[in-house]
Amino acid sequence: MESTSVKTDACASAPRAHPRPEGQDRYTISEVAAFTGLTAHTLRWYERIGLMPHVDRSHTGQRRFTNRDLDWLAFVSKLRLTGMPVADMVRYAELLREGEHTFEERQELLEATRRDVKTRIAELQDTLAVLDHKIDFYASARRAPERPCA
Amino acid sequence: MESTSVKTDACASAPRAHPRPEGQDRYTISEVAAFTGLTAHTLRWYERIGLMPHVDRSHTGQRRFTNRDLDWLAFVSKLRLTGMPVADMVRYAELLREGEHTFEERQELLEATRRDVKTRIAELQDTLAVLDHKIDFYASARRAPERPCA
DNA sequence: TGCTTGCTTCGAGTGCACTCCAAGGTTCTA
DNA sequence: TAGAACCTTGGAGTGCACTCGAAGCAAGCA
Image 1 (spheres, rainbow over the protein chains, first blue to last red):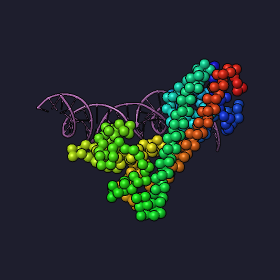
Image 2 (cartoon, each protein chain N blue to C red; image 1 turned 180 degrees about the horizontal axis):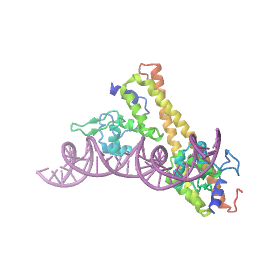
Image 3 (cartoon, chains in turn red, cyan, yellow, purple; image 1 turned 45 degrees about the vertical axis):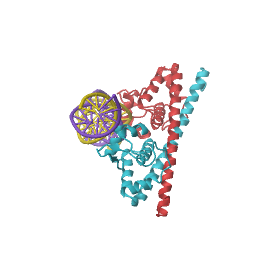
Image 4 (cartoon, protein in one colour; image 1 turned 120 degrees about the vertical axis):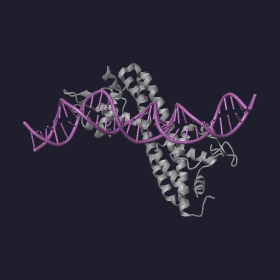
């Protein structure tokens, strides 16, 4: 059931290149760190707080990440960029673990996130306009130092 | 010299509505807090770390903010939205205090910020595409629960 | 004049998201 | 079989950006 819901979600993702093909996808933590840009510390911490759905282990207990884990981490990294709190992402991870009956709540969560992202883009475009205005001012002030906007 | 450089910068700003006209613009800290949405604590902290160029005082030592201070705070709030570290904003505030010979460095700082903002907008638009893709998946999965993307 | 509300300072406390440490077990190359 | 380089854990530490507290002074109103 757990793997079903994760797989179902993976099927919603755009295809993505993996370092190794399916079947040989057993990465150590440092390989994942190198691939994702996260540190091994952060990866372990993600698992501890429930942000990594479930990570396989070798027979001696070392983590072995799969391509699916890489997809999930890529998605988490995107969400991080939006400023979404880690606690909210943990909530989404819980919904994944709980199976298909949480589809509605997952969709709502993603839609709320989409609204936040759109708001943030608008704010940034606003800021860009202010920056352009000030940069123009400095550019012309330095071309003609006699106080061109007085 | 201090007020000159601040004024010069204000002249680079887009016009903005103020609660009171020039000449009567002496706001208490709680008025500024209400207007900007920052707390009084935060405003005092901004001043302590050098992020407020210089705030007037009443004859008994209480802060009296001006329209120019409001403009500066509005700009700072925009920069905050971009994720710019406070230390960088303090650096910009220092350049303002140092006068017109810092125009070039100010422009460079703003241009670097603009590049960051553009990058961030692109990242967010990328994230938006991923969100749309997943939301579409949940929407159709809930309309036709027989695993529509298999 | 008294009362309430607001302002002052500086240092300490908070919450988030990591980031690191120490002590010990595992895996790989020579 | 040695040694280097990796991995494990729980808990403590870090850096940022606030956020709050306490003691005392200031301002405005009945």
